[in-house]
Length: 288
Length: 334
Image (cartoon, rainbow over the protein chains, first blue to last red):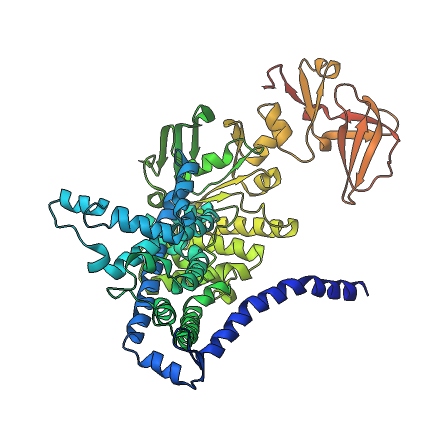
């Protein structure tokens, strides 16, 4: 009886959290679905009734749709590539005993605590500014013409800014993973004749595979929805319009909630496609 | 070939000297066991030979060549770790193949050696499994397999049996001994268990605080321990060390008598005492006798089963020819 009681007690105690989560997630989702089938133009007459699948066909047939999907995927891929490669290297570096280890580790983690809007503005005005930015000075120091980063290398700039924010997260997770590697394994490999490079690829990297999987999954979810960095730097110009940004433009700049909501539904589908691919590629690492 | 010579080898971590300058020769084909209490530097000594630690000063020679500065991989030694240190993401076959793969050996030769090792170690059915799916004893055998496929000049074992349960330990002890008889390769084995040392070794090196206390065959150490430390460390149960007037009768500061070298009687004898704890093992009986001046309790080993219990009064007589005498510095007088 005791277990029966505690089970029902557990259900009751979990109920508020479950309820809150359901409301938090289901209400916006249902509203998005509902609006996506309405012809809803706030400044041009409000809700003008059902639109059928009109919003969906219009959103896809827009010339901005496929480029925005592509940009989204490029940004996600680029950020993942940079944060995993440099995250692994940084984690290995930080794992080595050195003087001032604690302070260095805190400094490395620091960018993660800076708000996206702030870090994007810092990058835009202090680093990438073509006149007064640090990078412009560097370019001039070597006698080159300063690059107008956000215009000429716009997507790469966004990737750089977002990576800068997410690299600490990757480093942190990978560092904890690398600290759990049994040093006797590395010593055994050393005696077995493995070069430092071989030890990295045959011992350390496989050991990190699970942590890398986690980083990839979490970062994908967040980077798919990246918005502030684009909003405060390029404003979606120069080919940096992601799907999220396109939806924002449809809803607020074109004042068409129905069309934007349809885009939201497509964003959900895109996220799921990406998730399925990721789970197929890296998800099996989580099993063993 | 696998002759290892240590000449004035010293190891210090900062100001702490773990191993003061030390000389040792390990002959080709020998089974040498380093034994000593925890923290005596035996593992450090093994890691120095393996090349996992750098010597502070001194020379390590392998087959007459100076190997002091050689990286571990170039010393042609194979090591088996206490934690086995198997690669968890690789199958047993890949684990065993790893050193061969690193040496870029051709595939046919790799397969031949892996099959041979797997057969010798009863691992043929487990080659496709991962270490996580194996029992402790099997993992131990994989670690040994990974060592033997390299056909090294010498094997180094770092307390390889301490993670196994008692029954398995006895079995693996025999397997390693048999392996040594078959391969006739030099083996250096570190343990804190003197039973392992006595049963497996050709030569035992007893260490205390980084200093070699005695080097010799197991029976040498048993019959003529060079000092009190070795006398107390080798042999189970421990030797009884008697001090005071009883020792003075033999012109020594301390005399040592092994539990199996004491005759017991209920009527007459040299020392009188009462039985404290009596351990009846069936094959042997260990009596802990209290009341003997200079040593409390005295342990006595009697073959077979005897009807002596707690509180009984007994008389003990050490066999005169089996008494070890030690001076004030703890060194043997003979």
